[in-house]
Amino acid sequence: MHVINDKKEEKRPNISSEERRNLFIYLRRLSRDLRADISTLGTAANYLHKLLRRDISKKVCHYTLATSCLIVAADVCEDRGFNKRDVINVSHAILHPGKSPLPVDQPLFWEMRKSMINVAHLIFREMKYKLKCDLELPPLKSARMKLERRRRNSQTVQN
Image (cartoon, rainbow, N blue to C red):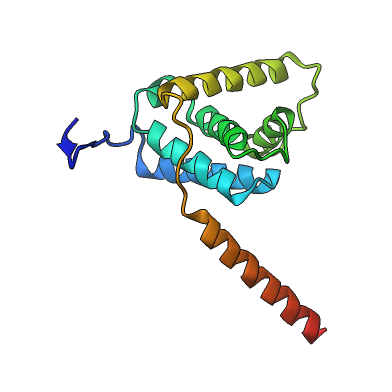
């Protein structure tokens, strides 16, 4: 690693740019389908971006890593709109579109839950428990909400 301006320059990602793009599309879709807060998505994307440059990304399935990043980000951002069961079912539905949701009594459900929790613990350790990330989202979030209100008001006036 090179030191530039007293900051360590991280390695290049361990995956191709197309795989990386698909992974972030998956994360965005997972977040949308779970109706996660925008700050949760931003935090999860930040974690995933950092972790893809580290050795953990060579050891863990990238989709499991992305899903676990969303779980950790939801805890950090205190986004309580969904639980781990919802994350597993939505993740399974995105990755396996033709299959039905996993019943809780199926062993595969519990294996997925256990692996996501284990990867979440790895994320905590890999990030050295420094999980708060400064996102410049509050101003963007308020601007987006203002635009949505204007759009709804203009639609109401037109009707």
